[in-house]
Amino acid sequence: MREDGGTSNRPARATSPYLLHHADNPVDWWPWGAGAFEGARRRDVPVFPSVGCSACHWCR
Image 1 (cartoon, one colour):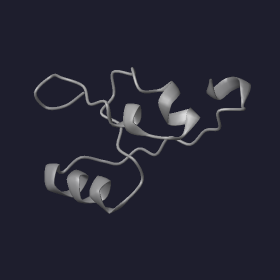
Image 2 (cartoon, rainbow, N blue to C red):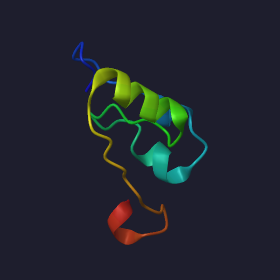
Image 3 (cartoon, one colour):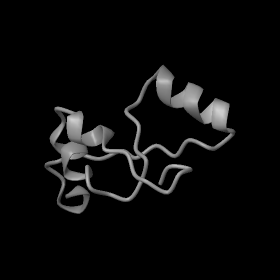
């Protein structure tokens, strides 16, 4: 969740089937990249990577 209590929908704009599957999660997901790390550094919060595959039974 964002600091204001809302959730972001960044995965909804992704092309990855795995990210699209998680677009409605109540987590402020960021795509892997410099922006994610800069945002975490600025807010002084940890980065928790989520790795999965849309073809994997447990990742769906």
